[in-house]
Amino acid sequence: MSAGASLPPALPPVRRVVTANDAGGRSFIREDGENPAVHTVAGRPGFRSANIWRTIDSPTPIDAEDTITEHEGVQPPPLGTVFRIIDFPPRPEDPEERRRQASASLNTLFADAHHEARHDKPGMHVTASIDYAIVLSGTITAIMDDGETDLHAGDVLIQRGTNHGWENRTRAMARVAFILIDGRPE
Image 1 (spheres, rainbow, N blue to C red):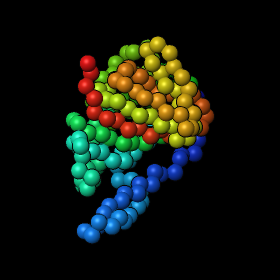
Image 2 (cartoon, rainbow, N blue to C red):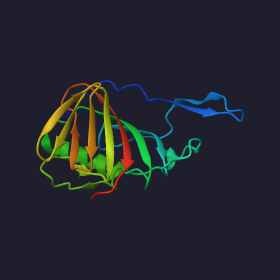
Image 3 (cartoon, rainbow, N blue to C red):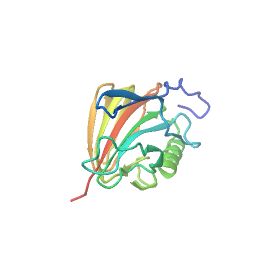
Image 4 (cartoon, helix red, strand yellow):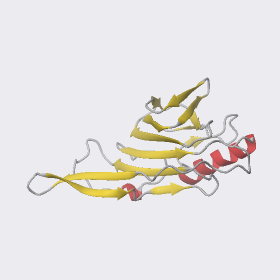
């Protein structure tokens, strides 16, 4: 996308539905609506990260209270998980703008990820986690130090604590669900 180009239409907000069991053990829909933890970045128009749910222990109590609005950063809590959905706008055509926008989202929302702003590939970062990345819509390019691959709706990438980045090289929005599980580097 050029500097003056407009963004494609935003994807609809993520609907979050949470279930529970009542005192008698019968299941019910406890919550149904927009997600309470949606984050945007002023320096990266169109980028939206919706933190959906997290666990803070393993094994986690099934009826644990929702603490997602307390979550900060990219990493899951120790022994826990975090589930988020990110909308990626098309990347800017200008390499310096691409670098600036990638740094803006990492520095604003994901400062706890190890990343080098000077890396020759913008947005590269590492987390101490096992990540399941599930493409929900659009196409996203998964970038490694050596190699890259395009992922399409329905594709799944298992990210295992490696240096990586994401780019949307199309003209449409891309939506990816991420489930991060706390891990330890060996």
